[in-house]
Length: 426
Image 1: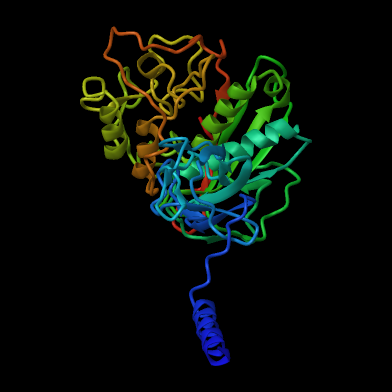
Image 2: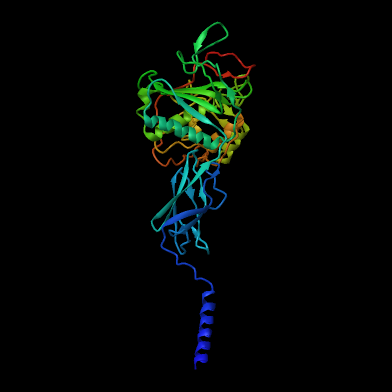
């Protein structure tokens, strides 16, 4: 009996030993406490274009173990982009793939917020662009909301002009006055009392101010290039934007942004270099006569692409002031024609109501000046046939009943030798 009992004990011990050497069961996954990004964070893409790599989110417990069977919702919370859906795709391992994220039109930080059962996570992205626009304020104080409108407009420009331009050493460049070549000194760029520059400009430097010009209901703005890269490279190095403080404060936020963006595009070069050489790229046909038109190949193609196959059969109609009241000065032959293109941002008059659209036509016209552009940020805009009225989506009255902008009283100067001398505007 004792031997039999001892043998039984050995068998039991052997069985227990074998059991203890078996696989350890997986630990129990705890409740959801956090979210982690497995891949896809901190990507970049051109403005208004989708990210190319998937964003994968992992719901986790406190120990970092995947919590399966979760549902995520997604929302763009900064940058103004869009999503293909508000929910993600749940994968077999419990991770969740975000919907396609198309970035916004402005070169500003982009954010996507993920929510899983009340736990949130922010995924960041950035806009790809090689173009630099810096706004520097001078003169009197500018209200914070006005400063924001300037920096927002610059971010818009960086979203659709994307190619880098050559840096320029501007050390010693005068900003106060310049010699016309006839022994006469005239105010230049930022005016008397301004010190010379002492820096290299990578891209575009804009000096902006709000000060009294001629009191309420007169000139609202004057803007344009001060220095360009050479006598044949018309891409602006330094420009100036001046607004009448008496008028600027009367604008709504939408009007303010439209006006500042409009003037900033003149500084970049729209309308400033359409003239024949040596002052421009020779982009106008019929100058000085009714029916003048823009013949730059890219801008012309842009007009046709948004419905202007008839209107822009031979050229893009530009402002000739025929049929327009309070037209002239800074309007003539430096804008698209108001009577043809209505609400488009770069016509000679801006409209009330919804923001004035920045069209593919305007964006592509910058190709004709030598810029590399991204066409995706163009706003929805259609050129309608003559005789048809475009739906406005709201009030479409003219914002100003006066000739509200005027050109700078000087022409820009080339940084490199070989250009024309500074001269007064006629």
